[in-house]
Image 1 (cartoon, one colour):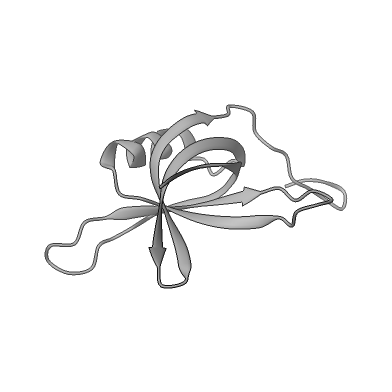
Image 2 (image 1 turned 45 degrees about the vertical axis):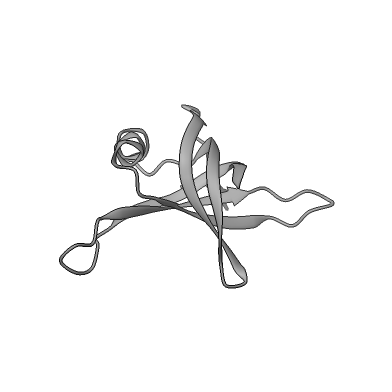
Length: 105
């Protein structure tokens, strides 16, 4: 099943594959903003496609918080859902400012 996932990309990293035949992959964390009716949620999205990993490295290498719209494959792993990135529809160029106390981070 494919699922659209949109939110703020709050983390991205490459993970080295373990073992002789294992491939590197990436993990991206997408924060879905809460509303008065729904809680906020942090979704981990795995990326195996080398081209998509390259796209994320180019677009997200500075670690800025940005809105992202994706399409992911959804798999069941026991009782949990696992999301695997299929397509990036949009990775916004607008940086989301985070403020604390007296100014931005």
